[in-house]
Image (cartoon, rainbow, N blue to C red; front, side, top):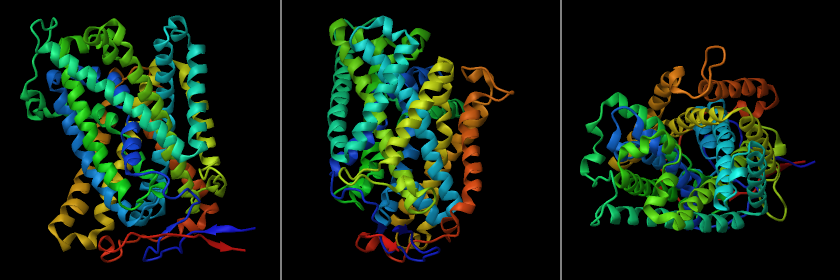
Length: 515
């Protein structure tokens, strides 16, 4: 029986990216950007988070400043993705890169962090997709039925899993349509809102935008950090465009550049829409408990009218459904890569002979997502809200490690130029440390029962159970699996080969075969 061999343990130099059987040159640079932006679910993220950011003590009209500050570590870590991907365009992304820089145990935990964050968020995304499907068609009673919502959520996950299974080209084309509709609607919403605010009859409570809205120094530092905890969540997901690097036309260059461009596009979208939203009715409207959990829908009738308000429902629906799909894509490729590195069972390395997509990794993740979604939706709405909060811990963990690992892996390249020092070392390091700091602050903040929705279990809040507890569970699984994956866990740390960024990108090489 043929088996795929991983690179030799402790190999000092990377000879190329192992061919995992994925389809080459299947998608272009535009698709990398689209997947990266769509995965963050801009409309859903704003609808569900903006009201809570505005409501944080001391924030008020400075929500755009919070989003601006939250963007900084994301851009710095995106730089790490760009250069790591240029050196090693592996679909495992953070898992593969951190394994090289810090060793197999740390790399495995980062792969687990990606999996954990993605599996938890699927419940929230599919729930929103289900609720907004009923809103779009006016099925009010179904939208209030837990059974109907669960059935619809399961169907959404099943449909998006099937699309991901059928091929990366189909996934990319659907993403372009969904994201195009979403961004267009958000742009229309913002333009109309600003036009009415500056018109002859501005809406009640409206306020004209001011440059002070974008000034983070106008807030207390502690209040700013608490708000950034929420801001980090709405940027998460842009790295999905890098996870499809091995299927991209320019695997070493395009996806990495797309990561940086995606974060820039996101900050533009968020600053524009958040400013328009709070300008239209003021911060009091956004912090109203009835409006807080769905800002865009609450503003919809006033901005676009009762008929066109459906556009915002479509925007949030396409946002959640698109993100459901782009959450499946990177997770399946992370576990596929882990299997090829012999860090997990080789069952996850299977690729469809016709569609050239991960089979067990894709379908298995879809099935697990359905199980977790059903459980969380059956528990309570407060549990679902706190599950979204819990996602922040694995996000800060693996984004932070990617930034710090970049500076360490490329450490011998940092002194060659000021550009290398800033973009390979200092910038990613600062971004990574900032995200770790946010994670620590989140642990203290969400450790207090008054800051969470659901009741504590054994004196510990649910976000800590799911977020930090989920990471502890991963560590236990990793330790238990070490005897079965000795080759992977025997790997040594590596540094970037001298001048690696000045050389042609590494080629994808056929796997070695042992008979």
